[in-house]
Image 1: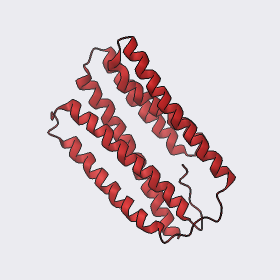
Image 2: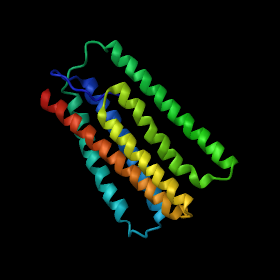
Image 3: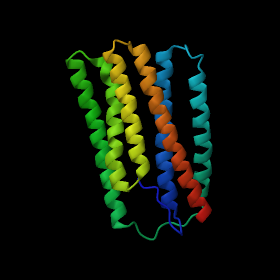
Length: 197
């Protein structure tokens, strides 16, 4: 999915932002839920409240962008390059999902299931690098580095004997921060499209 803008923005550009923003909403909710379950209320649910506020803000912008799509013209034709980028995005997404399934199977079979969440975070972090190349977005490189560092922190904590009650919140909250930053970036792209219409 590309979030580029042009002098004459189209409905499809804003719909791409909407698709990405919805994905970030779901991922932020998912990572936050995992973290709060692991914390068992030790944070007095403050992290959950904080990210719930972020998700509500994202939903507000989502509704605004959804309404605005009705006022934008449809693209006359989808560029061949955009179609290629969309296919590459799908391939990366499939590879990411397959990698997570393989990782789970391997870790269960070797008795290291506690390493699954940091492993997922590492795969998620790594998937940003090909996305950055496909869509020519520097932001994806930053996100990739950040999420990979979060995953490495989880691995280091586990190797030092910390329980998943500690490592799971660290990894999941780190990833929720990443998805929140990404959602914020997409809101910026959506606002730029609306300013140019």
